[in-house]
Structures are given as structure tokens and as C-alpha cells.
Image (cartoon, rainbow, N blue to C red; front, side, top):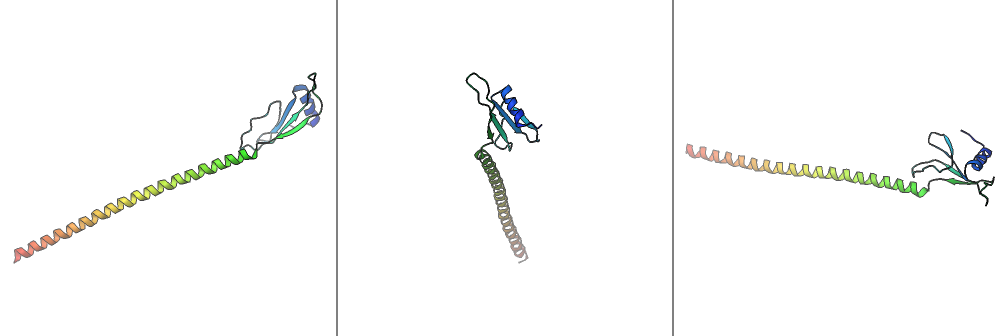
Length: 138
């Protein structure tokens, strides 16, 4: 919907003292008497046309145009928050991997410990059997 500035001025004089012109994500242009809700991540351009009123309440014909754009620090803050959340998630995943590796190591270490003990025990049993056989044959 395209509208000339003259029509906007006329609309402002008829409807309200402030007129907001903005384009949404789909490219549709809106002309309203209330500002749209803008979130920090939104990249839409909003223009505010202010029609000064005279003392008797009549609207003057000269608009004052003020672009309303989300403050850059809000978008930067949101990006920083997302980056911080991403870093925390990576740290959490790293801790999980590290804990699993430690558990696996402890299990393997215990398994090898008992393997060595069983091997030593088996060697001692075989030595006892060998000595018993040699004693019987003597």
C-alpha cells in the first residue's frame, strides 16, 4: 500500500496528532495512529509523523517526522545474551564429556587392577599346584 505524503498529512489531520508509518517483515506498509510493538531483534523501520496541534485543538498541516528504530544497544544486548547462552551450553557439554571420560577411566583402572590381582592369584595357584605335584613325585 503506497500513500503519498499529502495523503498521510490529511490522514494525520483527520485521525490523530501522531501517525506511524512502518513496514513489516512481509513488506506490507502500515499507517496507524499507534506505534507498533518493536522487539530488540526486529529490523523494521518506523516513522512517526507528528502534527502539531493549535491551542483550540485543531491540527496544523506541517508534520514533524521522527524515525523510530530499535536502539542499537538493545540488539547488541540480545546478541551478547545469545552468545553468553551459547558459551554456557558449550561449557556444560564440555563438562559432561569430561565427567564421562573420568568415569570411563576409573572403571578401566579398576578393571585392570582386578585383572592384575586375578592374574597374580592364578600364578600363585599354579605355583602351589606345581609344588604339590613335585612333592608327590618326590
